[in-house]
Image (cartoon, rainbow, N blue to C red; front, side, top):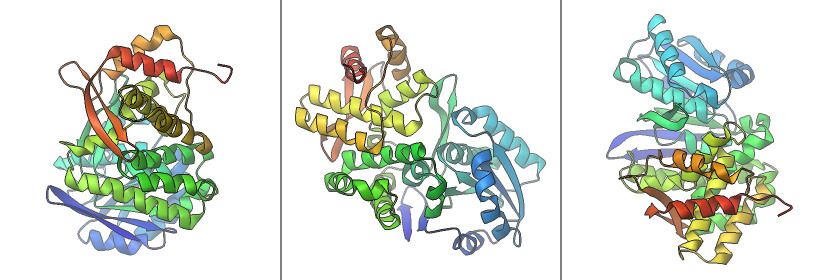
Length: 365
């Protein structure tokens, strides 16, 4: 299945949802008739699983080298990007050569960022092997790395030449990572498509069983939601900010808990917090809030945290670094209703603390 991404404001590319790697070579070779070298960027876990699926497809046409990083958020760092730049220089890469990322969101970010910097920009392709990367991280050309404890504070916009999604990689994806990726899919329904949100609930069992046809249909709809927004606003000057639903408080909690929650889990918590604030500001009903909160539970996503209330100031301080803020005020994407979101300015500190209180409970409470 091919999903083309086009925009008058940026370069176009295609997203391919496929069952396996068998269609990759022909598409890749056709894109780069003048390239001599390909550098694979991946993490140790993914590279060990899929190097034999990808490298043999390319070696007849290109000189293939690899740069392998440690798995996890700690590798999403500017120093790792600089190491890639050094490796490309020492390997003699030219502007016609290609970076090929294979993995999840971390690899997507550092591959795109490194490609945007080297020789002022070389082509990059991404093979998404996680649900998170398939539905969100790899789409739209937004590449970010963490710096001094702040998530994605450094980055660039650099559109890929192609995104390839082999669904068979989901068979080796840990359960926790699968459901973490689903949080971004749920987010897309909440912010843009109420019918899709209900479809996700109605197909809960098939999704949890990883039925391939259901997953393919789910990805197609989710990708098309993000694609429509990105095509209209590729550089986040307007509606693309809506894709950050759940990310303001979510990112703050993710950095505060420093590894306790993976990204998708933090987004789920952030969506619950955003829905709570939406209710308290009379944008959605109490019933809608509790439905949004509870619908994350069947997909094994967290809806609560345990933390000392004295640390709310720490989380708030992290929240003030969010890129959507302006003039020292907290701006946040909230729900107008299920299936429609808006950017709301001047969210009070008291409201943020109330949302943290709402999240901060145990089953005993």
